[in-house]
Length: 606
Image (tube, rainbow, N blue to C red):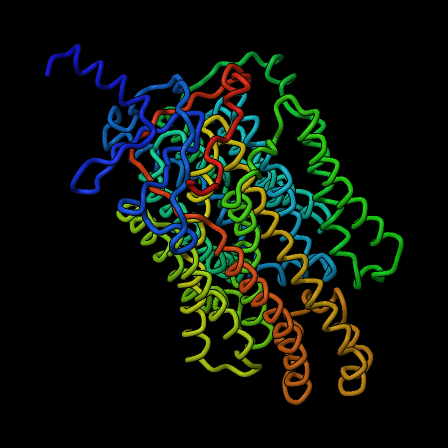
């Protein structure tokens, strides 16, 4: 075929939304850049399973002009370049994930060091709050200024926060430094996913998302172990000092090897484009809501004006954020058009629910090991390995399966079904060690948790336009981190309130002084005291701890079941390997109004 005819054929193909070849049920697809990202539902002969058996295929819109970008950027990169890029992103993600879990085994020691048992929950929560509240801001800023400079800035902020944590002289300073760490980690958590979405087709990016899930899980596994080693062998401060050289290495690898489009947006123009009002509303609303949940029933009664005002004004502020984004924001952090699809809404909900349930394992199981089983910080990290290691391999494996089959709904639903079983089994752990149960239950829970680190993100990206991939991915990350943060807070509320409920019995059997040390907000912070108790007093205290933890896992199992119900609403579509690299900058954000439309309405063909 001549070159001219090749060109004509290519032009014709670019205006073809979907065509089915005769005979072998193959399909040639090219999807408009203004439509859903590289995804369609074919006819019943070629499509993968949809959300409901027998449902008619999805109707496709007329094509629109393709987005300007580098054609087939994946073909232009060598394997070495791809490896270096992915390695740099994995290293950055590893740093943020490590600092979420490394704190789990050292908090009792830190609380004892600063003589502040009430600060137990906030050492972890302050990091997660800063992380969650700023993720939407990081995503939009990267749309304006480019991915690479903003990711480097996030690493620098994380480095500064780690240094401040290491030199902290009080519990208040440590909590504040952890918040700074969390702000930087927010960018590190979400930007690797956005970078991969810019660089790879939706079919191929699943394997990298799965790899990120594996890195996250490995860091989660190493975190408690490293925390235990540093606490018992050196000092808890080394849990933060270790980030300094790792952050520096990550920074320079990203600086020299991460090659992404740089829009070179002028600083003044870029700052004017940031949605400052929306940022203030979402950060303030998130913080007020979680502060209210943390204070309720512990620091203040649930009926107190402080708690009521924080929760109500937090919710009102979040509603105002939605109104602002929908009607007034020029460059919204979360464009409301992203929520117009059943699949996108379900994916966002799964991001929150999955993180909420997952965190109950990685954050609260060490409390069970240390408080109930009397394990040292180091051993509690080792005891957690069955859970985090199995989910890491499952996450990577599911990414490979999605790349090969193009099916993401089956892994999502099957994973959540096993999650319900696994976390339901945690309710049966008991106040005395049964190692067969402890290991098997963690393996089951890990198998269930693994598939849903990234599979819902693939589902989400099938129904959003390329120019909104950054906002959609950061919103997904925001809801994940909000789920993580609220899981720690709500878990702490349940635990503390359950310990408070058992206070009369503890006073009768242990005496007022010891009972007060195990009540309310003091309970989790005095875990070392419980571990040191011997005889009947120790049995009573550990039984009380287990009763509180058991109630927590009943709640987490209910949330896992809710996630399973939500997953039935996700729709399966075909994933293609075609891709155009997305360019950032204000010119892209200020594109035609037609580009704001999401043509892939989830309707059936006539």
